Amino acid sequence: MDKKDQQSKTTRSLKKPFSEKDSIRVSVLSEALPYIQRFANKRIVIKYGGSAMVDKTLQHAALRDVALLASVGVQIVVVHGGGPEINQWLGKLGIKPIFLDGLRITDAETMDVVEMVLAGRVNKQIVSGINTHGSLAVGLCGIDGGLIEARTYRGGTHGLVGEVSKVNTKILSPLLKEGYVPVISSVSNSSNGRSHNINADTVAGELAAALGAEKLILLTDTPGILRDENDPSSLIEKIRLSEARELIDKGIVKAGMRPKVECCIRSLAQGVNAAHIIDGRTPHALLLEVFTDAGIGTMVVGRG
Image 1 (cartoon, one colour):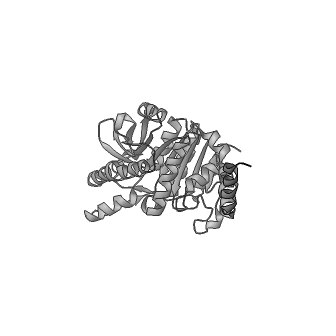
Image 2 (cartoon, one colour):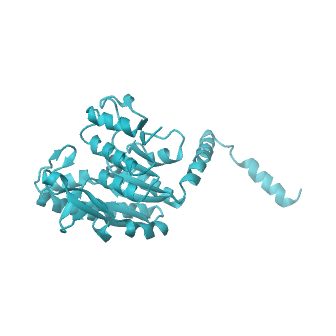
Image 3 (cartoon, one colour):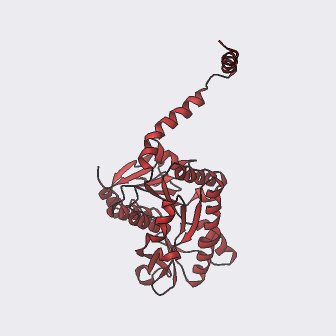
């Protein structure tokens, strides 16, 4: 044995043995490999909202997850809300937030605040957070490049709340091809140029369909779809599209969960392979869903 080999052997013998944590890390990486291979160059649309946007630790974990997904070749599109910050600014201006059927009533004064907060402050904070972790994010709203065209929801019952009339993904394709992460706020114009506030879950679902996404993932403040909203153990881990419709009809899915489930239903009906409603209060919820066998939350599928 020459001197170099002897030194190498001595160095190895001085190293600490692998711990249980090291073994777990290796196991996790091994489990993730087939998913990394499966989703490389596939598109996943993520609706980023809830506590994952507010709590700094969760925010850091979620944006790091986005950067990691992008770094292994997944084409990620992030659509974000910003309800808590909108409410904060409305409060500063003495405007009381009002909701109906889980959607914000949006008069002209409220719309000004929504546009300022979503397309400006919140959007750029998310872009900056993703960039900090080594990916390249680009901030957009539905107005940019004619990405989303809005029409007034239910003839104006909710004010300047809109629904998606058209989706034009032309602006997104070159960004995704070059490895950028589009970060999109849901503020969009109607055909007459009037700004509208569209529910971010709805925008995420319609974008997922238009992009032919493999998955739609909604980060929420609940474990997923519950049969009993007061009982976390009643989580439904997997549900077919037809069963999801029944839960809405029976009033089991209601209030803020209703638009989330409705957008899952619409995206699946338009060709998205699977939609997931997951708990953003769990650190690294995105990686747990995409890269592990068990996943978390509720998976909505078209069949099976």
